[in-house]
Length: 94
Image (spheres, rainbow, N blue to C red):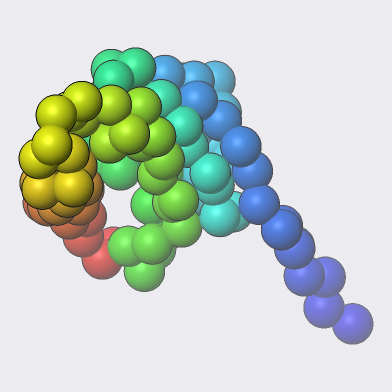
């Protein structure tokens, strides 16, 4: 009988280096990117799974408070796309 390691997920802040060993084997919800200053490059390199996925990166404040003016939707979308592009720049399949 084979033993299968199963993990439903993990939550760790983007600056939580002690948790990096979990990231490679589990899906991980990672707040702390954006306004809180988490390092996207370091996070993606430490946390992606072998197929280049595994991270659910959250950036609430950086997007929700991108602007308080009438152009909020446009600026929030631009911030969202900028974060997506930054994440994808550092992703790679192992």
